[in-house]
Amino acid sequence: MKAEAFEYAIKKDVRNNPIVREVDRERHREMLRSLAVGSFLVAALVCLLWRHNELVFSGYGIGTIRANRMAQEKINEQLRVEIETLKSLPRLEEFARRDLRMVDPGPDDHGIIERAVPSDPPSSSDLAQR
Image (cartoon, rainbow, N blue to C red; front, side, top):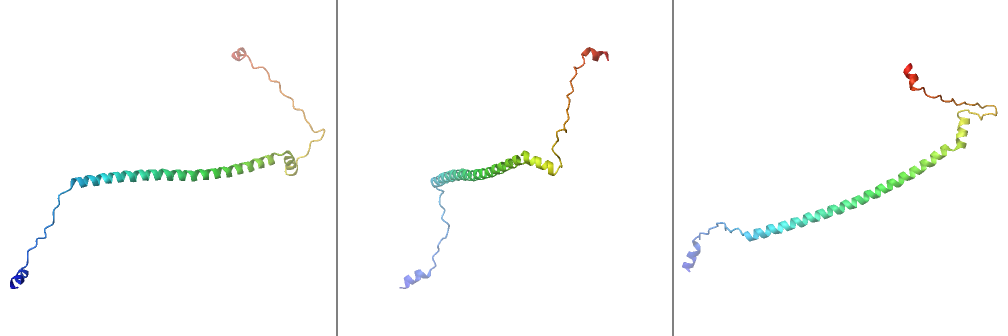
């Protein structure tokens, strides 16, 4: 037993050198290939989702524009009705009598406006003599 005990009493020298592995080129190529394919798929998915979101937001914008157009058409129709109301002859007559204090013309209240007869333009020889 003393021989066995002697063996354990001696401190064994254990080398803790790091293990150096060779670079596995095939594994690196496969990893880069997988990374490239994954990046392409992610980029394609991002582009697809981006276009989809743009279409959805454009649809919302079109709906808003249509609603605004309908509101503007309604306002336009109301303004047309108001213009026609303001142009009505009975309303204009009442406005003229009440606010402008105008009166209807009597049978003797009329005048004749004569048109002036245009004369011929002077000839070029008349102009040259002046």
